[in-house]
Amino acid sequence: MNNIIIQNVSKTRPLATKKQFKKWFAVALSHHKNNHEIVIRLVDTKEITKLNKKYRKKNKPTNIISFQFETPSGVKTNFLGDLVICVPLVKKEARTQGKTIIAHLAHLTIHGVLHLLGFDHKNKKEAVAMETLEIGYLKKLKIANPYD
View 1 (cartoon, rainbow, N blue to C red):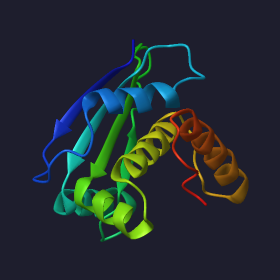
View 2 (view 1 turned 180 degrees about the horizontal axis):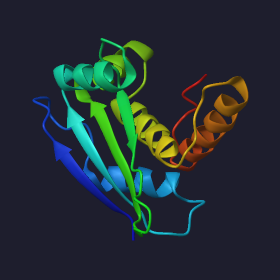
View 3 (view 1 turned 135 degrees about the horizontal axis):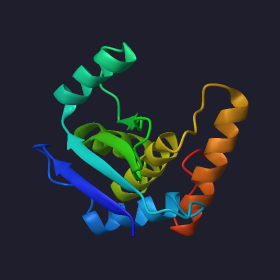
């Protein structure tokens, strides 16, 4: 069974339930047999900006950052890593993009999990592969293509 630890340190009301996050996590792992664990940290703009500046050299907020766990040699674990999600920015983006908060958050969660699994979008080929998976997983959840 997959496990999620939720750390809500945002002053903004939570956007989704743990049950919803677990569902999205399970869908993103549907091609993987092992049970996995992640931490999802829900934060405000100040914390995500600090993390974005420190780890991505960008001095501005972002909607999500994925921290893939680097398993030490000889250690066996199913821990994938951490997702840090900026609650106020997700709400703002959903409004601006004409999406529901839940649809946007589901997409970002799946996107982040794919990063934890080693997917990326640094070039066109990688981006197409990752977006195709995201669209397929969201379709399973009856959520529209976020790239339309």
